[in-house]
Amino acid sequence: MLDPIPEQFNLSDYFLDHNIREGRADKVAVYYRDETWTYRQVVEGACRAAGALRSVGVKQEDRVLIILPDCPAFVTALFGIHKAGAVLAMANPLLPVEDFVYYFNYTRAVTAVVHHSLVEGLAKLRPQLKYAKNLLVVGGDPGPFLSYEKTCAAQPAHCENAPTHRDDPAVWLFTSGSTGKPKACMHLQHDFAWNTERYAKGILQMTESDRTLGVPKLFFGYATGTNLWFPFAVGGSTVLFEERASPDVLFSLIAKHRPTVLTNVPTTINKMLEDPAGKDADLSCLRITVSAGEALPGELYERWLKRFKVDILDGIGSAEMFHIYISGRIGAVRPGSLGQIVPGYGAKICGPNGDVLPDGEIGTLWICGDSAMTGFWQDDARTRQLLHGNWYCTGDQFRRDAGGYYWYEGRADDMLKIGGIWVSPLEVENCLLAHPAVKECCVIGVKDENGLVLPKAFVVVNEGHAKNDAQKSTLVEHVKSKLARYKAPRFVEWMDSLPRNDRGKIERKRLAGG
Image (cartoon, rainbow, N blue to C red):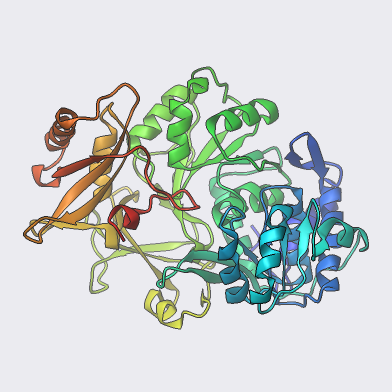
């Protein structure tokens, strides 16, 4: 284990360059469509990218945006930013182009590496970009901006990494802000190595023989870790694709590239099980599947394990802590549980007054570890509210059992108080999901005519099942037969699909009309 992390420390050296020193220059690092990129090619591409960034005025600690689909240019741009000692920020390329004005001006990014499909829209918005005027465009016509490929080609294939310190700023990861706009969690160089050593190498047991494939896209810190930084840290390889992660795309890529680690989310796990192609899909190449982003119901885990014979390590992490800090263990999964604390992290479950609660009681999870952010950019009040010394208050409701396993009960602001008793929507949702008619569901609180909060279920039914009042009654009675009767939904509403954000999480506020 890299402990302590040396004072002079650069993320490109830690994740990428070491592979050259360790004899992997000609090993394939990236699979993309029918292309392959070796570590030598990635290093050379990253050096050229660092030169391109410097040529447009990027200095150490400047912010640089990446707005790209998952492709080799994302990889070289990311490591080029590391090499230049700049600060990486990433945005979803599928957002409405108008949304990027906020990201540019909020981060004060001096430039960005963007996809050619965004050129026309960004050109129109150029007068609104206060800090970035010259962008680097990947593929296609760069319009009024610069071609990433041509600018990189004019740079040398070798460069020296910026002399960054382990405590220098390195990456901004976005999370939901208190104002509704995404806020940046500011992270230092060493944060990412610290988690990699403990989670990727310790829990996932990743080695150079691993090949990763991810459902979430690289702009999301969860995927940046599992599908790029982590495999590169051990000399493994990654499979990248730009398409939406539909079951047919995933099954095709698994058949073609035979990955060993699949990064997944519960929604897609369910879709892969429901897809007809899943009945005959061969997933025997997978060593493990990783799940995060939202709670994985125990029933869904059992179905996956029975069908594909591949274990799922569920876990919870956050942009504030970079990555997963509570995780299942290989060979020791308890269905429905998020597992145990990742060694090196600390956790406590606290009541409203900050008192530590005994095992079995539901409270707010506090977490500490050396991958914690330094704070939220331009939100000092929220930083002071949630960061207390080494501890970060997650806002997530958990209980811990006597065996040290953690069980997620929902967000603090999602909890429902029914008849004076706290109810976890997740518990009700898991119960509904066990019914054969239910494909997806979400439970929120709504007020009745007397102003009392009652549970309401939004349900997507499986094909072949009725959507009528009798079915609603059946689902309510199903919950009453499994849980305390007061936890059963008073109302059921049919949905064709549940609203989700760009990270795949259900948007409960939209269901509540917020």
